[in-house]
Image 1 (cartoon, one colour):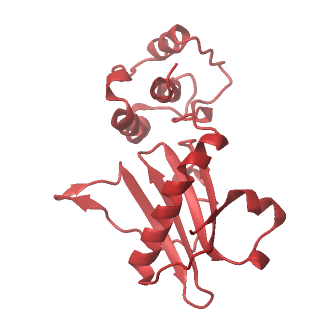
Image 2 (cartoon, rainbow, N blue to C red; image 1 turned 90 degrees about the horizontal axis):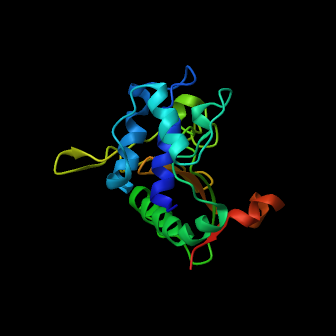
Length: 200
């Protein structure tokens, strides 16, 4: 099964009404995110638990009654795949950093990044690592008057005292991340080093 199909299945699992936390209104943003990635693979909006269970069963996925829909990833990417995306994340951080500080990151600067694909990781649901109090600025991203927040959105914060910049973001409601930098070695703990990006 392709990753595009995985995304659609992940969404359908979320839309299952087997638990009290899934409803049509709350799932609309994730629906739009999957439609952006794979519009031809997403069936019509599920309107009943029976439809949801049937779609999951046909895909060979069993969702137990005590398993919450929010436990399903909307985009199934593993850590190894994220490594390939690090080039994009690094460029994204450098561009946003320059836009809001008017400074260019020095070569060799360290950026800590943390990413996940679980669409449950949003502010309303209390994901602390994505929504630090430090991230007070939320730009409105538009093109030709159209809101693009379903495609890409971010929040950022900057401390002029220590020069630390942070940005949390989402890509098409499927990939969520937090990046902080520039850091120095003394800021890092041993377990942090595997999630570092280095500015070339």
